[in-house]
Image (tube, rainbow, N blue to C red; front, side, top):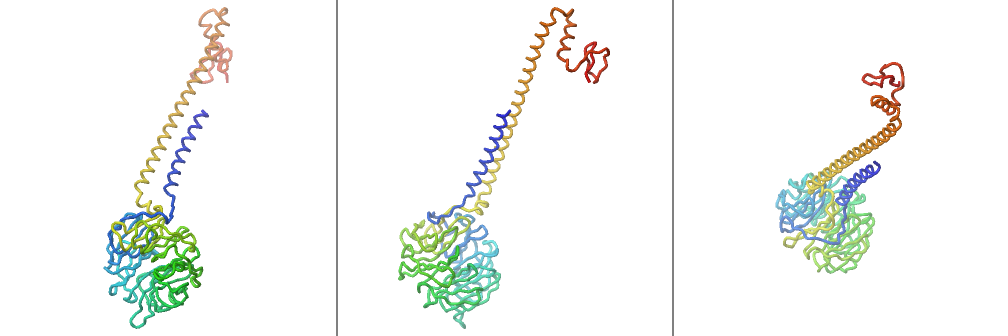
Amino acid sequence: MNLLKKYCRTSVIAVILASLFSVSVVSQVAADGITWTSRTAAADNFWLSVAYGNGLWVAVSFFGTVMTSRDGITWTSRTSAADNAWFSVAYGNGLWVAVSNTGTGNRVMTSPDGITWTSRTAAADIFWNSVAYGNGLWVAVSQIGTDDNITNRVMTSPDGITWTIRASAADNIWRSVAYGDGLWVAVSQTGTGNRVMTSPDGITWTSRTSAADNAWRSVAYGNGLWVAVSDNETGNITNRVMTSPDGITWTSRTAAADNVWLSVAYGNGLWVAVSANGTGNRVMTSPDGITWTSRASAADNFWISVAYGDGLWVAVSQTGTGNQVMTSGVIGLAARTTAAATAEAARVAAATAEAARVAAATAEAARVAAANAYAYEAAAAAEANRTLIIKLLHATANTAASYSELALVLLKKLDSSKCVKGKTTKYVKSGTKCPKGYVKKK
C-alpha cells in the first residue's frame, strides 16, 4: 500500500509539474532588439509610424492607410477616416489618435479599437508631425505655424477629439514629442541653440539648448532618461545621440554608426533606434542610452519608426517589397491570449484528459492493490484455519465419539471468542446460534 501511495503521489505531481512547465514556457517573454525578422505588411506602402496599445499594434502611412496586428506578425488593412498623410499614431487612455500633414478640417482621427476611425478637426490645418499622450492630455507638434501666428506649432486635447492651439517655444520644425516623469519634451530639426522645448503641462513651453544643433527626429523617455536621435547626415558620429536626466540639460553621445537615425524607443531595459540608411547596421541598441551597438536589420529598408509592446519590438519602413515590417523578441501575453486561444484550450483539454487518465489509472491500481491485499488476507486466514483444523483433528481424533461431536468441538475452537458454555440456547443476536450447550458471549 505504501508503494501504491507513492506511485499515486508521483503521478499527480508529474502531471502538475508538466502543466506548470508548459505554462511557464508559453508565458516566457524576451525582447532582445538584436535579432530581427522580416514580416509582410498588410500592403507595400509608405509607412510612417507604428505604436502599441491595449493588445494591438497599429501603423499609419503617408497614403492614408492603416494596418493593425495582434502579434506584430500578421497584419490587416483598415480604412482610415480620410486619405491623408498620416505621420504619427499613439495610444492612450483607451483611445487611438493619429495626426496628419494634409487634409482640410480632418487632420486628426481617433479610434477606440484601432479598426474603426473617425475624423476630428485639428486646432489648425498645419503639418502635424507627432502626437503623444501623457498625464491625461494629448499633445501634437507641427513643423509650421498658423498664418496669423507662426509659433502656434502645438495643439492639445483632453480627449483626443477637441483640440486647442498652443504656442511653441520657437518657430522650429518640431519633429517629435513625448511625455515622461511629469514633463513634456519636444525636439526639432531646425533652430539655433533652441532645438529642445519642455513643458510641465503641455501648454506653456520653454526653449532648451540641445547637445548639438542637429536635425533631431525622435525623442523618448525610459528608465529615468531622455534620449533623442538625429538624422543629420553632415553631423559627427559622436553627436547623433543626446541624453538628458531631466529633459533640460543634454549631453552628446556617440551613435553606433553615421546613419540617418529616425526613431528611438525604450522597452524592457533596452533602447532601440532605427535608421533609413546604412549597410547591415540600420538598428542600434543600448542598455543605458549612452553606449550603442550596431545591429543588423531584417532588411536594408528605410526604417522610420520603432516601438515596443508586450515583449516585442516592431519597426516599419517606407520602402521594401513584402518586408516593410520587422520584429524582434517573443510574442507577448496579449497576442498569445488572442491568437493562440484555440491552441491553449486544446492544451488545457489535453492536460485535463491526461489528468483524468492518470486518475483512472490510479484508481484502478488502488482497486487492484486492495483486491490483492484482500485476497492475501483471506488466503492467510484460510491457511491459519486450515492449520488450526489439522491441529484439532490430531487433538480430538482419539476422543471424539462421532463426526458431529468433532464438528461441535471444531466450531467451539474456531469461535471460542464468541460462544461460551451455558445451559440455555439464548441468542444475543437474532439469527446467530451457538452449538448446543453454548450461548453467545455478550
